[in-house]
Amino acid sequence: MTRVLLADGQNNHDWRATSLALRGILAEEGSFDVSTFTYPDQPAPRFDGHELVLSNFCEFGGGEPWPTSVIDALCRFVHAGGGLVVFHAAAAAFPGHTGYQDLIGLGWRDRAGHGAPRRFRVEVADPQHPVMRDVADGFDHGPDELWFGLTGQTAGTHVLAEAACEETGRAEPMIWTRQPGAGRVVVTVLGHDPPAMTGRGFRATLTAACAWVAAREKDS
Image 1 (spheres, helix red, strand yellow):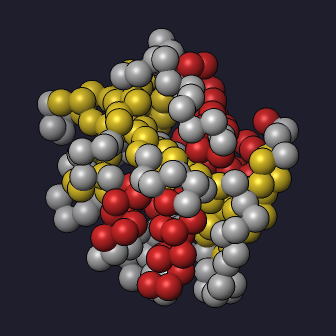
Image 2 (cartoon, helix red, strand yellow):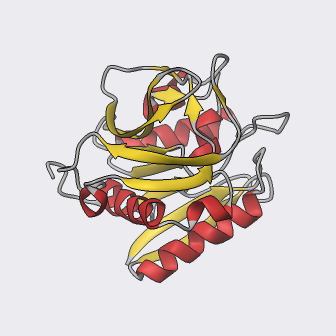
Image 3 (cartoon, one colour):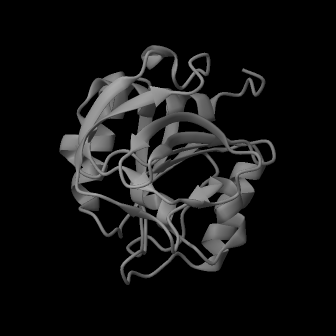
């Protein structure tokens, strides 16, 4: 079983509902053992002992961020070979922490936005990547938020999937990877609420992302 630490406790979304949905998707897949780090109820997580962290945490909108020592510990965990999957609003977390920005590459910062939830087509940019192989032809998704204007580090950011955005007139990244140090990171900005998490494409890419970041064969 792949040991997953689900980080939650604050969010500008209904994190309890989305965490329940995340746990359900991983339980249905059958190869993940999920424990939870809920901040601030649990102020000191143990990242070691898990293959990956699945983050559903964000202080956006006035919440309390993790202490710097905890964010630093997450960065060390990933750089040492741990996995990280950043789910939706967690891409807006910790804007002042350069180490976390390096982990995620692109994030929701000052210039980001989204329109009203709608259905849209997710096009696959790298159909050979393990995260995308089960949906290599793309998939219809939503209704969900289509994020745009994400900023950060493009160098070292490998876009796996994107969607045409009406607001910007260009394709915006939806799922991407980074490999900081010996670790692996997948960021997906899909999944605003549980109904947006029910489609085949979301479920397939989430479980594949968790499997890929946890893999020990780092050349695959």
